[in-house]
Image (spheres, rainbow, N blue to C red):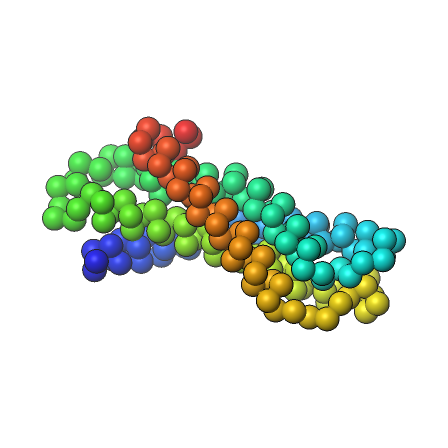
Length: 177
């Protein structure tokens, strides 16, 4: 278990230091803000609350579908990094079990993807304070609406997408798969 934890913390540290991870976070933030801007216009015209739970869930689901592209980059890199730099034979000669190693890498990729998807509720919260959002189109603040949509839609989507993409990349030994 300690070896799994060490691989997980290494993977998290590696992925969070990468520039591409920061770019992915900024893209998620920008995408969610752009989607919320179009929802603000609809909320004004159609007479519903901008921060209604259904709207929060809708934006979370849409951005989770766009997240598949970035999840492929994170999971593919995590699964095939050792093969690409020709370190795989050396890594698998250590007393570290292959299952613990791959599980640590997968959990690291999943955690990074879940952290990237935190940009969506952050963008939705920031959007309520944007200029042009009138108080009459804002409903009462409900933290459970943001948490529920994140944990009910974004995290399971991230888990399934990361699992499928990580498995495909690990089995084919190619990140592009």
